[in-house]
Image (tube, rainbow, N blue to C red; front, side, top):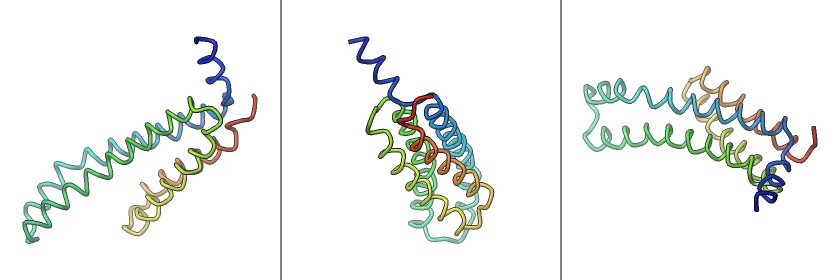
Length: 134
């Protein structure tokens, strides 16, 4: 049993694992940073003249992005243990992050967009390196 676990960990190259860790770290930092703005945005939306329903929905949608980024970071870590399926999941993960990049740039969030784009590229590099041996 332990031998099987050791073989699974050896399927992904060392550089692929490093790229997974870097991409996951970037997403985790972005998720925590985004979530830290919840109290500020709560006060701003409460003081706005928006309808009550919109105020309630906006906060849920705001925190959803933070949860999504942390979840994607977790998926990036998980791929290091998936063996042959890692490449396909890393490509899917990159596409999901790129969709967030498009939304960030649409909203004018240049710095978060660039950080997310960096994470997406790093996950693509991890997909390329996933089955190579260092």
